[in-house]
Image (cartoon, rainbow over all chains, first blue to last red; front, side, top):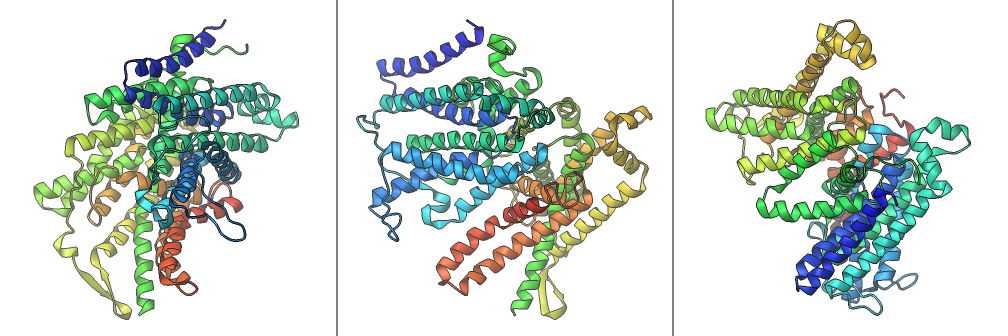
Length: 327
Length: 305
C-alpha cells in the first residue's frame, strides 16, 4: 500500500477514535470538537474539489456554507414557530427532519454555486479570486440587512433537528451522523476524481488549450466542478448550523472562506484527505493556542505563513512524501 | 429640498469614491507591476489610521498625523515586502492569497494585542470642522469636501508620477516586461519595494482620512479592501484610470442606492417593508453593478484581455 493510503486510513481511524475515547471518559466537549472538525472537513473537501482538482481559487465558499446554514435555520425556525413558509399557491411547512434539510441545503447551495460560478467563471486568475470574494460579501451584507430571519442577530433553533431512529441530541450519535456523511462525501469525491469527468477537469487545470484541442469545453467542466463543490460545502453548512443550533451572517463572512481554504493548505492542496487533516489540525490548534492566548490568530497566521512559504504541499506531503502521479 | 439632499448624497458618494480610489490604486499598481494579489492591503489602511490617531493624540496636530500615517504605512509596506512578499512573486495566486491572508491575521490580532479592542478616535481639526455653504443653499461638512480635494490631488500626483517621472517610466516598463527592464539595468527589487511601499502609503493616508469620520479600530481595513477589489474588477486590473472610474462608480452607486432605493420602493409599498427591501437591495447594489460589468466586459472597463 502507498504511504498516503495508510496515512489516510490512520486519519479516519483517529477521527473516529478520539470521540469514542472521549465518550468512555465522559468528556462531551471533546466529542463536540471532533464533530466540528468533521464538519469543517466536509466543507474543506467541498472547496478542495474546485480548488485542488480544478484549480479554481474561490475565496467565496463561505457563501455556500452560509446558504446551507440558513436553509437549515429557515426551515427549522418555521417548523418551531408552526408558521408555514408559504401558503399560496401551495402550503409549504418548515421541517425539523435532517435528511429533508440536507436535501434542500444541497439543492440551494448548488443553485447559488451554479449562478455565481456561471458569472465568475467568465474570468480567471486574480479576477476570479476577487469576484468570488465579492459575491460572498454580497450575500453577507444581504443577510445582515434582511430583517425577516434575524438580520445581524441570526436565528436560534432551540432543539437540534431529528434523524429517523437516532437521538441527535446525544453528542456521539450526532458525531456518528456527521462522520458517516464525511465518509460518503470522501467516497463520492474520490470516485468523481477518477471518473472521466474528474480526469478531464484535472487536465483542464493543467493545460486548458490542450483540453480544448481534444474537444472538451473547460468552462463547462469548471462550472460543474464549482457547482458540486458548492453543494458539498452547503451540506457542511447545514450540519454546522445544527451543531451550534444557531445561524448568523458570520457564516457568510470572508474570514470563513479564508478558514476553509486554510484547512486545505494545512493538509495539502489537491489531496483527497488534505482538508480532513487540515480541519483536524485547525481545531487542535484553535483548542491549544486558544488556551494559551486570546490572540491565538497571531500564531495561526505565523504557522500558515510558514506552511505557505516553506512547507508547500502541507502536512500530508511532510509525512507521506510527494504526490504519486497515479495509483 | 430633495434636490439639495440629492446633491449632498452625490458629494458623499464622490468622497467615498475618492477614498476607494486611494486603496484601489495601490492594489492595482502592485498587481500590474509585480503580478501579486495582496489581501493584506487593508492592514496598511488600518496601520495608517492607528499611526494617525496615536500621533494626533501625542502632538495635537492633524497634519503631523497625516504625515505619520503616510510614513508608518510606507515603512510597514517596505518591511513586509522585503521579508515576505518578495518570496511570493514567483508563486501562484493561491500561495499569494494564503500568505497575505496570514499577514492579515498577524496584523489584526497583533494590533488588538497592542492597542486593545476598543476603538480610538481621531478628531477633525478645528479649521476643517463645521459646515461650509455651497451654492443652492447647501450646507456641507468642510472636512468631507477637504477629503475629496486631497483625494483628487493625490490622484493627480499619482498620474503625474506615472506619466512624467523617471520612476514612472520604470513602473510602466515593469508592467509590460519585467525581464527586459531588469536586463536594461534597473534594480528591479528596489523598484518593487518602492511600488509596494507607495501602494501601502496610499492605503495608509486613506485610513487616516477616513479614521477621522469613523472610528479607528482593528478590522477596519477589510471591508474597504473588498470594495477596492470590486473597484478593480470593474475598472480592469492594472489600470489606474480604470481604478479611478471604478472607484467613483462604486462610491456613487453605493451612496445613491442606499438613499434612493428605499424612497423608490416607498412609492409602491408600505414604508416599513420598503425600507427593508430597499436597504437589502442597496447593500447588494455595487455587486450587481459588478456582475453587470462582467457580463459585458469580463476584463473590466479598462482591462486588457
